[in-house]
Structure formats: C-alpha cells, structure tokens
Image (tube, rainbow over all chains, first blue to last red):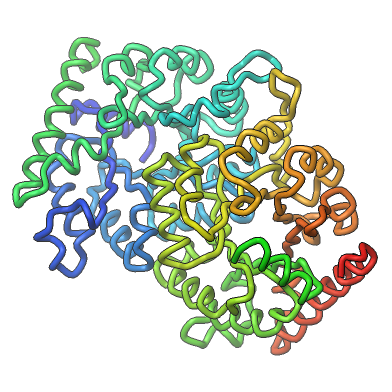
Length: 273
Length: 273
C-alpha cells in the first residue's frame, strides 16, 4: 500500500487507528480453546468486528513465535485474512547485518506478504537498507519508544547536544524517504513529538502507548499531527481484550468504534475530512 | 549451561570456536534438496562433522524464519540434535518492551530450549530484564557489532565523551552479571576490545566477524582475552560452506579443525591448558 492510498483510507474510515493483534492463549476466551487454531479464530473474530473502524493491523510477532511453527501458521492465516485495503505491520523490531536483514525482509515481505515491518536502526545503515530495497513496502524504524527503558539510552545526550533518538531519526531519514519509511514514537512522550516533527515533518509515525501504557490521544495529535494526518495510533490490549466472554468480539467492536469516533471528531475539528 | 561448565568445555575441546548454523537452500549441496527436510539434514551433517572442534552452535534465526513454519521445525530438530555439552545460541537480536520480551524469552528458552539468545539493548532495561529472569540461561547483548553500520550510531560520542557502545555496555552490565550475560563484539574492531575489557573484564564476549568479514583471530585474542578465556569466536560461512559437493561435511570438518588447532596453539601459548 502506498502513502496516497493510506491517506485515502484514513479519510474513508475517518480513523487512524491501528489494532495490535497480540493474542495469548491464557487471555483469549476459553470457548475458543477447543477449536483447531484458537489463535487464528480469535484474530478472525477481532478482525471481523473491528475492520470497519481501523486502517491498520499490527500483529506482534513475539506472540506467534512463542507457539513454535503452529504459531507461524496462525500468523500466516491471519495476514491472509486481513482485507486488502487495510495496512499490515509486522511488529518484529528486527535488526542485524546486511545478509541477515535481507532474510528478515524476505520473511515478512515475501513469505508473509506484510506491507511493513518494524526495524531497529541500532546496527546502522546496512541493517536497514535491505528492507528498503523492497518496492512498495515500508520500514518502520524505532525512533523513541513508549517504555520506561527509553530513558536508558534513547534519551541520553550525544556530544552535539541532541538526544540520541534525534540522531537516530535524523541520520536514518537519509536512507529512505517518507514513502517507504515511518518511525515508531511512543505516545507517552507527547512533548517530544515537536522535536521529532522538526526532523521528519512528512513521515508517518506509528504511535503505541495510548491506553494501557498511559499515553494521551489528544497530546499525540496536538504535537504529532501533520498535513497528511501522519499518525497511526496503535491500541492492542484495550481493544482485543475489551471482553473475554462469548461476546468478546462485540466488546472489541465497541472499543474500536469508541476510539474511531474520537478520531473522527479530531479529523472534523481539523477540517481534514 | 553455567559459566564454569563452558570454561571446562573450552579446556576439554581445546577450542573456543562457535559454529554459525546459517543454512540457505540456495547454498547447500544440491543432493540434499531431494530430502524431506534439507535444512535439518544439512545442519545434522555439519554438526556431526564439527562437534568435536567447537564449544557452541549459533543458528541465525533469520535463516529459518524466512522458510515459514517449516523453517521453525527445522530449527527445533537442529537444536534437539546438538549434543548436551555444547552451548547453544539463538542469534535473534530481539528487543522490545517488557511483556513482549517475556514472550521472546519464552520462545527461545522454553519452546526451543536454547542456552542463550542475542538481544538488542536499544530499548533499555525493561527490554532486557525479562530474559535475565530465566535461571541458567544467558542474554548476549549487542555491544559493538562487526558491520560497517556500527559507525552510524555505536561509534558516535555521547556528551560525557564515551562512545555510545561504551555507555550501552556500562549501563546494561548492571542489570545482570557475568554468569548470565555476555556481549557481542565484532572481531573487526580489534583495538576497541581494550576499552570493552575495562568495562566488563569478566564477561564472555561472542565475537563474529573473523573470516568472511575480515576480522583477525590473533587481534581478538590479543585485546579480548581474559583469565577465563572469555571469548567465543564465531565462524559461519567459512565452515559450513567450506565445500558444496558430496564431501561438504568432510570439508567443513577440516575447516573447523583448522580453526580449532589455531585456538589450541593459542591456549598452549597462554599456558591455559
């Protein structure tokens, strides 16, 4: 999916919501556990219930990987089940030397046909460039993450007085462009979006941390918005575990709809739709 | 495997060689492709041929993942086939927030029963601590990598005048100890081992980059050695692709033996065995 199409979908759905598909056998409704592939059945129900209200799905690969090869089969079925007009993100945070990055790109872009993958830039240009060689695909680089540990390194200052995450974004932005790269920026860092927008005014930002992690939708929009909207706001647990009885899908539908309606109001207030 | 046992194995084998198991269908001998699981058959033959000369095996997860769930089955069979007295490293370079790291730890330590996993510390303490909760298992953190891109960020200076990789190693070393943590340090950075040994004198270092990437065994030992040996030197392509005909296993045996004999001489010169 190219940038223009993504923006179009945001206008059509009146939403810039990304739903994180992080299923755990210990958390999904008990009645699904008797089925042949409970993880896929759970995802299928969540997708059916929420696809009207979101523009992206983001399976976190760890939650599939830990189930062994069976988990990868559930992942493949899930990606195939997601409608064509919805952007898919493999939340894998991979990062390795060139020949290995090329393999990871092959995995997620070819074997599993994702639109995008999250990538760590820690190892430098040659760890990222192999992903950017895939035309029509996106690399979403870790910029400033939502977790407490972001302060351990990302928020240290470099010798030129910048935060380390600013150096990472500024340098890596030269490797691609806003048609094939996005950045992960945690919603828990509202005020720092201003600094990031000075470096990458046109890139889309993938924003985790709204909801369970305490970030605010309003602050994210206040500091992170650009003319293309420029934001994909992720919610995982708040939507997929909104209920855990027989009506779990209905509950997740209501949770997704509630976020979509807040987003619709924001888009209207911005005179953007 | 605990540290004492690893040191014992180095003494017994007279080797601190780690063999990287990075099989590619396009590179393994053609006659294996007709078998049901060519990747496992290749690894099995390489393990049989080299197990006498190495103390660790390091499958690079990307090379399995790109084959989908079938690749993960080959990985599982491979790990199960490695003899008990050989240290196993999942070269996965994972790094994510706490609940996700916990899942990755579960994957590699429980589902696949590896002794260790390579981890990126970029996201800070909470990205690493869940791995350290697994007793008897090891986290091998990216310190200073062997690739060209290491200079993009790892070799930038922080405001206190340190290289960024020094800050990463110094801070992360506080999260665990030399009985549950190691560091990845590329052999292509010989002289910088001295700086690293000032910060972590007692930790084992996992050293890629000897061979295909141009690093030197002599320099690595000169600057990186400690009283416990403290080094696991990895070779992948140089050993597993030493041949590609019917005698590929024999060729890889000779390649592994050659490195082992260099190492034996080093250990003798050090009066360590």
